[in-house]
Image 1 (cartoon, rainbow, N blue to C red):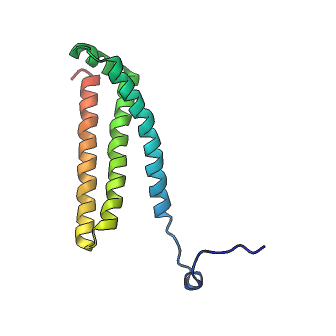
Image 2: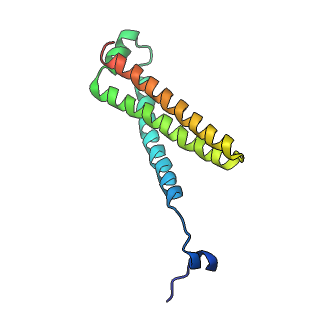
Image 3: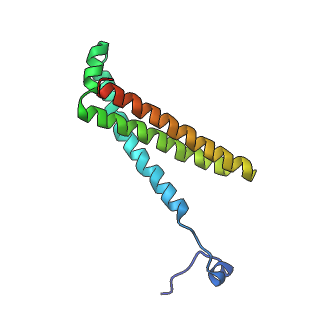
Length: 129
């Protein structure tokens, strides 16, 4: 049985097709979403477990290497996932090319800057700064 193609005859003739960028973006967003579900459940359970704890107890908890690593993953994954989602919104709804490109650059710089700030804060607490 012959395999049916979804490409147009013109697309088949000139060899144009997907650059595979969309599939990579889709997978990155899904994988980061699953990671955020797991990390979010861990974080929520940790907050519940430390409800009513004083500042020193929370700092001691965050100085645990496993806790610090999970918190770093939560911060990094949160900002990465948010940037992926915002990128789709900008690409879909901003139609002026210069505004789209400048918005994407600004969004990625702000997202990564906030991620670095969050990572720095976790590391400063974890290493007793």
